[in-house]
Image (cartoon, rainbow over all chains, first blue to last red; front, side, top):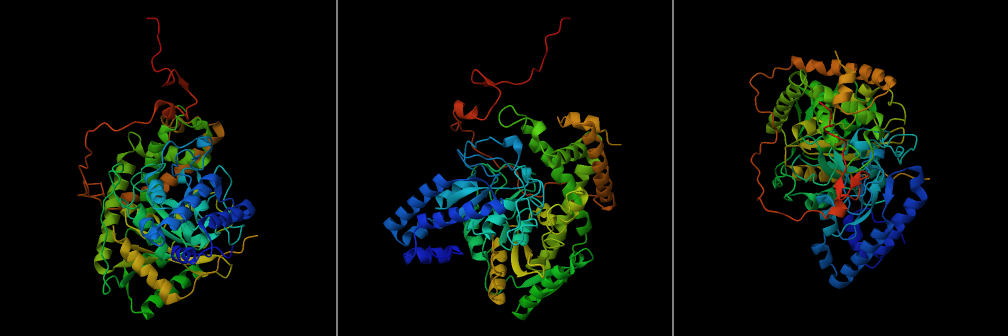
Length: 470
Length: 94
């Protein structure tokens, strides 16, 4: 078979032109995984039999319905990998942890069900930091995933395997979760598009919970249009997650053309090459008719603290259910990062400390949300770095947890405020690693992100090259 | 200030002496860092739910449950179609 399709539209055209079948597509992805994933370690479980079964069904649907099949099943034949937090009925689901080493999910998460019903082919479960605790992939109990652009470097986390899988062409799309940046940062490190929807846009049902007021369910794709296609399938109420609402913004041709640049995000600590690249992207927008406006997010410096109180608190509560009785191994199988977060969370929720820490953090959270509400009265979207640096070397940050936490500075605010964000790749660094930026917008305004992101792809006209895997 | 032994009991985590020492040090560092939140004026804020929705109801209807064998499928601690748990109340002679 010739080269794998790079996006959904391209694949539909090629299928229609009878260049290949869905079974042949799955063949190609599986061959790549078999020969190349040993150096990347993006998969925990590969679902060969199910993938072939789905592919045969897709071929049958296209044969029966022709191009109407794409209307009925908008993701027909789209090969997707799932972060191993997503429950998949009858298939091992580990959360990247040895606690759930032999756990089989008893039902599909809503998102998994929606993707399947839209015709998507599930190819496997991807590696991640255990319980989504991490921003590098190094906290997985199944070995770290490597960055496909340079395997001495991290792919980012916690959705490390999902990002690497799309970057490596082991799948066309992949799902992830973003609680403090865990989609946007690995997308940025691996040179793919990563969407963090608004809190309450996509159901969290069936996805192993990390921090229930911060978890956002999203995905990785090769371009912005595919991101939108997946979002239209995964979004919406399902009767199981009471926090989901069916709200979206409308975008007309005259709107959404002012981008805010937060002055607090461009101080020291931001790598010079990353900064230069963001300024270059801003320039491209400005040259093509977008208005650029400096804005202020005054509580930026408190965001990490708000996040690292609320998140561990909620983590300690959510991981309380893993007692080795109804499922899983005992709590002695928790890794050190999980234990650390459980301990920190227990402390900030405990009697005598709850008011000072958790309650205070929730109040500052409200103030941070107000910062963004104010900003979005002046601008339609905000542009920001995703991470202070490009991907870093494996092992270079694992000794100081606080250092690792501080590098979440650009991502956590979106989770705190419940707003959507999209990470978009734009260039390759002097060291050969992907660089990019993120766009943030008002709650439930993903259409603004898609429109603004697609415009960049059009204006830039440059697609970063895929990594050469060995 | 941080009572590691008390916390590990609350968290139901059995920690080694080395882990207790390490986590105490790391926790103290993080707690010290996050304490700067005291500087932020939050007077007058009572509502902490940023979700702005309330009273989402579902009808009180019985829906099908998972079959018992599936419910018990992943358990290593079961007996007679039931989950087996640690003893809660011990019978002590008065």
